[in-house]
Amino acid sequence: MPQDIHLPNVAALYTLTRSMLSTLDTSLIFAYLALMIAIGIYASRKQDSIEDFFIAGGRLGTFSIACVWLASWVGGATVVGGVAKAYEYGISGSWYTICMAIGCLTFGLFFAARVKRWGNERQLLTYPDLMESVYDSRTRIVSTITTIFAFVGFAAGQLAAAGAILSTLLGWDYSTSLLLASAIIVVYTATGGFLAVTYTDWVQFALLFIGIVIVGIPVAIANGGTWATLTTELPAAHFNPTNWGVATMLALGVSLPLSFFVAMDSYTRMFAARNEQVAKRGTLLATVFLLPIAVGTVWIGMTAALTHPGIANNDSVLSTFVMATFPVGLKGLMLVGILAALMSTADICILTASANGSRDIYQRYINPDASPKRMFRISMWLAAIVGLVAALIAWQMQDVISILIIAFTINSAALFVPTVAIVIQDKVNNDAAFWSITLSLITVIGWYVASTLELASVFTIDPVWPGLLVSFIVFTGIGLIAGANE
Image (cartoon, rainbow, N blue to C red; front, side, top):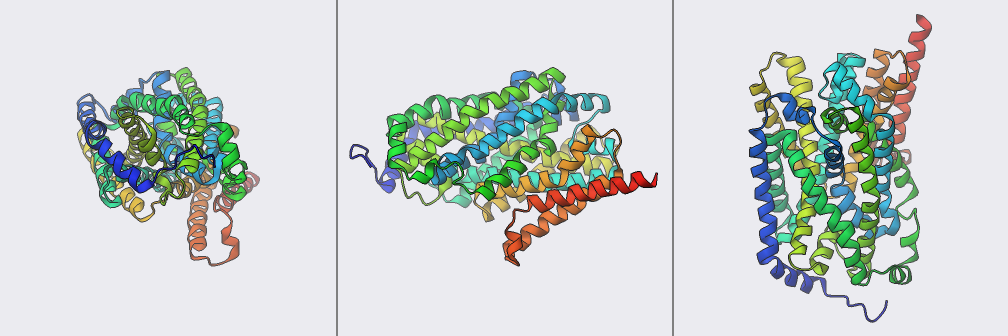
């Protein structure tokens, strides 16, 4: 390692930077947290219908759609988790964001306009709405259960990252920081709905993109992270594109892109677009912004590996690097941007799971004639419950990426085959859809439990593969049998 690169003592550095955060930077953080609650209250007064609460009335433009995509997907896993994986594994840490770009691109090219058209033609608000309109109510039920499982997991991943960030910034313990982040997110999501999410996403994405790409890369270079130094001083494994692990990367390369096609929030965004062209253009624009973010997170993570080796909690790498290297004031804005990205992802996940409960269970099966006022109230209570459950998972499982990979696997393995069949088949079979989703969901959960208990060596295989295989075999098999009997 070059002698001119100064390696500060992390403990001493933390004490110093905490004092730097005691005035301007800390004020910015708490001002942002207060602003989120204020926006939620403001947005709640702008809502005239349940469509406003769940899809912003279907009025969003191209840039808004792109920002909603980015602010919700570019969260804890992409920024905090991406930097952490680059810190640990090097350039292969970009794989998560690259997979996201692949999923966003393919969804934008082949599904975005179709989904918006389906929404208009069938008056859809949720993904299970679509599944019932094509298949039957049984399929709606199992797709709702699968979506709730997945989005509670997604929310937990973001809350875990937000708790880690606040813990580092404020010097509080993880549990207290997690409680604060969860409480604020639940309050403004439950009160403001999709309008609150949209209002904040423009600023949140701008802060994040400027901080990670436009400011973050130059700051990393100025603090010893030049390409020449990184290639010379870091272990050679950091430049191995499969250093994260081929099996893990392959499973992620399947489950994450497929999740774009079955994640309910993908459909919610398209339903919220002004028209089909806006839905497609906004999704493709989001893809363009993802690639420089992948570069920025990897550059910062690898620079931190060079200048701050030995950080115990990898999810604290980004916040530690920002606190150590960014100028006062700009430091606070960057930290607010990171926190905003985490919170903007968690809020849409909580809202989505809440919509599943209120629209797809309560209104569909319990009280079909529920008034908008009652639906708002039910949605608010469900948002609080979802947030609580997600926070408990985040408290128990503090690894951001691990939580999200489980959620992506549940979602993509169970729902992908019946969803794609809507596009590629002229005639679909209701029994095939219901049983393929049900048995795939059972397979994935059972496989994951068996792998956790280490029951046999076969369970070391990622559950996405048996889940997809079961889904495909059951869907195809029942469809062929039904066709032969006609």
